[in-house]
Every structure is written in structure tokens, then in C-alpha cells.
Image 1 (spheres, rainbow, N blue to C red):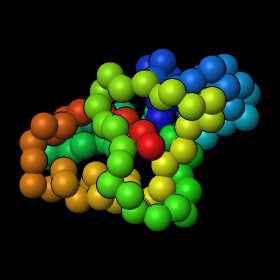
Image 2 (image 1 turned 30 degrees about the vertical axis):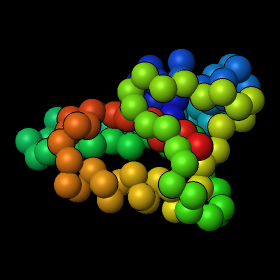
Image 3 (image 1 turned 30 degrees about the horizontal axis):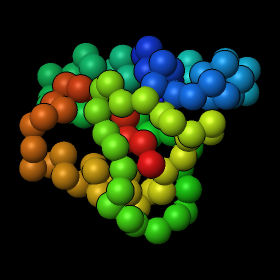
Length: 104
């Protein structure tokens, strides 16, 4: 989830200062614990951090990386675009042991 582990700086104002700390405080705490368990694994892993997921169509238009930032007031991306990004991670090693954001 985008906002965990310092990735909140990649979100816009509303997500960073309202949604995460007030509305999703407990959810963020749970995700942080989950990420720590994964990071201790001896396996290869990629933690994908999307913002709010939608049921929108696949477009193939998204940005990804550990330093991308959201331009919209409230970030969202379709599940189909996140799935596309995740499938591509199966054949690449760019983000192995990394935590890229995927932004619409």
C-alpha cells in the first residue's frame, strides 16, 4: 500500500495528511508489519505499493518506481494496470527486494 515505510511522500496532499494518518491509521500499521515480515524472508520479493485501487479498465498507462510521486489530489489506479505491472516483475529483476509505487 502506498504510504507505508516512508512512501507517503509519494502521495499528494490529501492522501499524505488526511487519508493515511486519520482514516487509514490502523490499516497502515498492519501493512507495515506485513512488509517487515516479507523483508526478513530469504526469498526474492517485490512489494508493490499502489494507491486506492479501482475496477477501471487496463490502459497500460501508469508510472512506477521508488521515487515517483502522485500528481492527483487523491491517487488511484485500476487493478488491471497493477496486475500488468506485477506480472512484468516475474521476468525482471529491477525491483527485487524493492518497494516500487505504481501510480495511474
